[in-house]
Every structure is written in structure tokens, then in C-alpha cells.
Length: 409
Image (tube, rainbow, N blue to C red; front, side, top):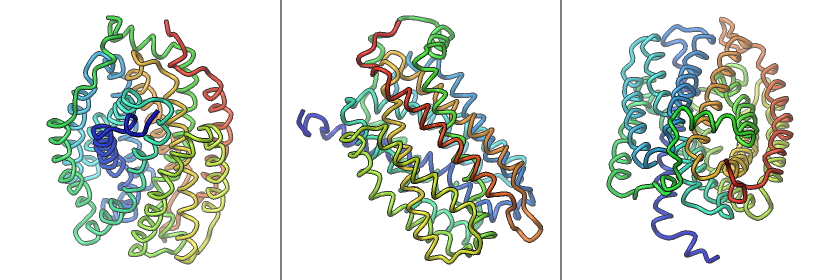
């Protein structure tokens, strides 16, 4: 099949728009972690309270995703995207003006209610519009948003937070998101081919059919476990890097910048590799690399900047390989009429699992009066264990017949 047919000008536009949209969503979530070193003393909160701020987004996103899943295949996916993205922008604006811990917690909850659904809509659109033999490549480009948030977003967010305060990055995201919402409204075509196959079930029946399908259950289990690791390490990553590894707050943006630049190069290459050599094989390679680096990172003491600039990109190369390959594998699980609901429930489980993991991480680690983060190595061992189990779970997904070859009831 020719490249021109697979990637028309409109499809390239869709990939670009979805990648930028994903960038704003990921940045909104990720920027909270590096802000932890400033936010905790500014609001005079503990690690447990900060973990709850992170988990509030995840738990509310999970709950809203479950509620929306029954309706996800009953509407044009473009309309769903516009609705939830508008709510996300509003919630992020409230984060940018929240003066207290309680109001920030409420604002993160609102943001999660809307933002948590968007990822599943993005992946449903991607899977609807692109054939299975190029999804690894497409996922690689869409997941470049993860790297771009480090190259552009996190350094910029940390810079503006240093110049002004921790509210500024959220305001910056709002400024970026409003023009993108308008572009989607004007230029994106309806994504409604799935409506032809809609069986007329009620939302509750459609949701039940989705969550009770044995094929889907295996995918849900794998996703729940995949989310645990990142949500445990990420909330306290900046505080650990600054207080335990001895990296200055001013050098923190440099680490994110270099890591993101490397991931921007690695992401598309991993996508192509996923299509050419197989998603499960890439997942194994990525897991092995990430597992070793997680254990090394979590046991580090005072570390020079040059070492972090070497280790962090390698760690995120492994994480990126896991993200892209697992997305490609999971995209083969649902058939088109169930895709929106599956992706919605899948995203919800990811967020709920991550929210619980963040809250547990906040209970495991604690910050001493000097700022040192204690018991961080314990988190590393927990994450390593989940990575090993995930390889076994993803093997079941790999061995299942593809949805395009599978007739659902």
C-alpha cells in the first residue's frame, strides 16, 4: 500500500493536531511534578497532600471516563473531543488562579473530569482513521507529545514559574489550548463511521458489553498495571532530583530539555520499529531498558548534572518504547463499534490505577525537614515488579486475534 494513500494531507493534519492536543493534555499533568519542589513549600503542604493533588486529577479522570464510556460510541468523536477539551481548558484556568491547597485540589478534580476522557477519544480517532499496519508509526508521532512536553513545555513551565509563580504554567497552557480548540472546530471533519455499526443499545448496556467482554478484560488488566509505575515515580521526581541527587532547581529545566530532545528523535524511530519488527518485541526491549534504569535512578545519591543528562534520556527511551508499543497492541483489542467505549474504560482504569498509585507513593515516601525524600528506592522495587508482570500480561494481548479479524457479539 503506498505512502500517499496511507498518509494523505488531511491525515498528516490530523496527526499534527492530535499530537499538539496530546501535548497540552500531557503537559497539564506532567508540569505538576516538577512544580512540586516549589508548590509544597509555597502552599505549606506535605508529600501526602501533594500526592493527593496528583491523584485527584487521576481519580476524577477515571470516574468521568467510566461514566462517559457508555456514550462514547453514540456520538461523532469530533463533537466529544470539542466538548471535553473545552472543559479541560476551563479546569486548567482554575488551576492557574487557585490561591489555596483546597481550591487547587478542586481545580485539579475539574480538570481531570474533562481531560481524562480526551486521551481515549484521541486514540479512538487514531484507530478509526489509520490502518493497523501503520498504527505503530502514527502512535509514535502522537506520543511525541510526551517528548515535546519535556523539550518545550516543562522547561518553559519551570522558567515562567521561576519568573512569576507556580500558577503561570497553567495559564500558559490555557493560552495554547484555546486556538487549538478553534482549529479543531473549523478544520476537522466528523469522525462518525462507527455510527453505522451502532446497535442501538442503551448506554448502560453498551458499557456492560464492553467491560464484560473477555478480550477487553485482558486489555484492561494490562493497562491498569502499566499505569502504576509512572504514577508512583513521577509525582516526586523533581523533589527527589533536587533534594536527594543535589541537582539545582535552575538545572532542572536542562534535564527535561535534553531528555525531551532525545525522545523526540527516539519516538518516531520506535514507531517505525514497532510496525516492522512487532509491537510485543519492542515492548519487551523497552521494559528491560526501563526496568534497569529505574532501579539505578531510585538508588542514586548525590549525582553530577552530566550523569543525569546521560541516564534520564535512556530511561525515557525505555518508557517511550513501552508507551508506543503497548498503545499499538491495545489498539487491536476492540472492534470499531466498541472502540470508543473500550478506550474510555481503558483510560479510566489507567487514571484510577495511577491515582491510587500516586496516593500510595505519597504514603510510602516522606520528606524530612531538610527536604530529603526518604524510602524512594522502595518505590523503584515496586515499579520494577509491575514492569515484569506487565510483560506477561501483554503477551496475552499479543497472542489474541486482532479485532479486525475477530467478530464480536
